[in-house]
Length: 457
Image 1 (cartoon, rainbow, N blue to C red):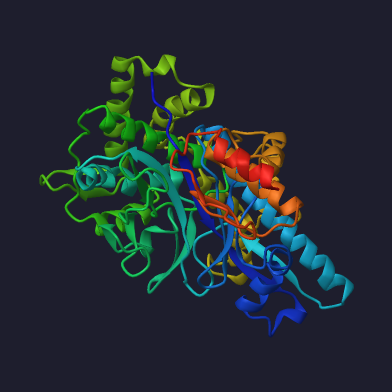
Image 2 (cartoon, rainbow, N blue to C red; image 1 turned 180 degrees about the vertical axis):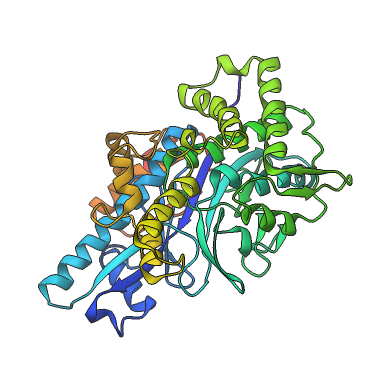
């Protein structure tokens, strides 16, 4: 039986004010407008919601949404998409106010990773691991996977170079400067090793992966998480991953991203060479063999089973250059085809302003202006969850610790009581003698101490 695992995604959004009235609107002004209602209700730009997730304004005026603790990929994808809905509802409210006041501007939110000035912002994945002394070694064994999975998890980008514009596979590849580090912004590593488990520190360690692109396609989001989860489970079972250490990880991640043919061979520490497809196939075959040996496939839910199969099928399609088979499941392929059709029809250079606007429109999260959102609605991008599941996730936490947090936040907010809530702590601030309730078990859905807090309301 596969033990459950806590999963989470943190997404930073690009934010811009557009229109004739937006000339003097700074990113800080736009962020202040977006969070105005949140400030009214919570008196802070860092708050937890009734669905258990975290909503906050990050450094650089970037709105960020961190999903609550999830144990299924369906819940994870639904809550990741719920963040889009929540932020777009916030933007719609402000845009309606702008229209009524004749401001001549609208706010747009983009689920991407690089703005027009080249500034980068992230999409971070979190995986709960059992605490062991060899954490660093386990992380390093996964670096070749994180570097090469961009071939199905990259979001695509029009990249400016000295030789002219070119399309690349990953938005984050050119922004990474280290493989493993405790820093998050200074060196921007693939995996951040700062020890913040958000749970019982004697039992758990959190693997914080910051190399991934923000995916618009639900299937791409699910695939990058499902494949990583399978490899983590292998390691926790004591299985040995294929030895695919790269000679120069930072050179490899860039070279792979810049090669749309997927034939670029990167050098391994052993002196041999391999393509990204070769490396991913070695990991996929090892993971499948391990799951077969342990009988895990009988335990998998339908979504994880689908994604495990899709891992192999995707690599086969990419190796055969059969892009039609992956055009609805890989963001960079869907986006590249969209851009190329428009570019050829209009006779434009890749870096023409109309092309750049089209690129950003792919990542716009509004139903009116978002191309990927429209493509999902019309079946041109694959789905893992329904609109109903996403709508439910906007207000309801999954059956993890998030259930306790969400229940408390909803009740305290409805009662207009001051409270504290973070990943592990809950407290009613104005109750005399009130204790902080610390929730160290991220899987727990019941707690007598939380019930007592609720009674105090």
